[in-house]
Length: 239
Image 1 (cartoon, rainbow, N blue to C red):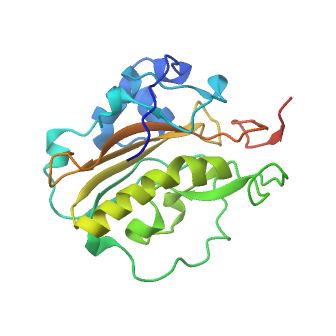
Image 2: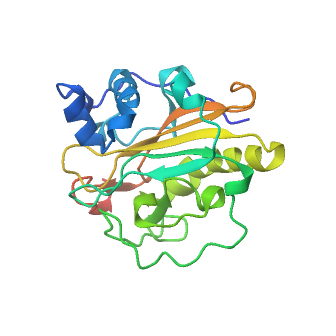
Image 3: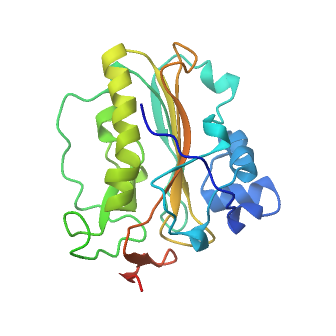
């Protein structure tokens, strides 16, 4: 089981935009994600000015996903990705994960893709030295899709320590139990920032009404000891 962390009372100023349409634009959400927009707007989520925080993730909405009953009634496996916005930023990625979607082949090269905010850095204090990873919204092991709509700039800590435990949890449930899992990743960008300051990860095991797997968490895009400029992706050692 994943360790649970209680969300703190930090609220992003970006989420106080007036009206759902403005918030939808800021988060890169599609029209079909209006319920997610409302849920995120009402949740306690840190903004870029609140980072860094002491946790690898924070529970959102008491760890209950924002999925509607209609979204949970879908039975045909799928995975979809928002078009890149006018700044080239990724948007919401959604799926009903199923063992039949899981790829048999190894991941190919993605080194030619440079998501927004990709200003690579090298630091001895970072595991593997490289600051940034090309972070999948929906992990390759779940669908095999490696296109630019599924890749964002994420720190090594965000990718390997924040997202990966949840991704492995979901993939293991799908593979070992052959259950379907409703899954959604919502990248959070404030204003015209090119580097997301975090994501919302939601997962729900449909076959047993969430008994095996259910979570709703904010994963901050941060790196211990490094100060990030979320507007550009620039960075420097923290003071």
